[in-house]
Length: 74
Image (tube, rainbow, N blue to C red; front, side, top):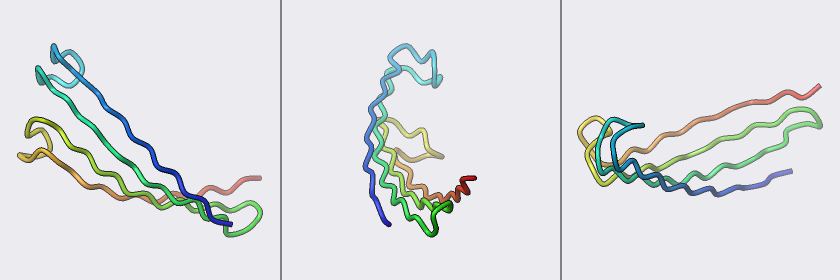
C-alpha cells in the first residue's frame, strides 16, 4: 500500500535565542511517501524545502533536502 503526507511549519526566533540570528523567520514544507513493501517493511522517501528571511543556509536563504528511511516492524 502507498500513502502520502504533507507537513508545513513556521518558526520565529525574534531574539536569536534558539538559532542565534535575531529577527529570523523560517518556514518549511515536507512531502513524505509511505510505501508498505511487505506486512512488516515500510519505506519512506521524503523531500523537504526550507525558506528563511535571512541567508542562514550556507550563504543562501533556502535549502532542499531529501531523505529515505526504512522501518522493519516485528
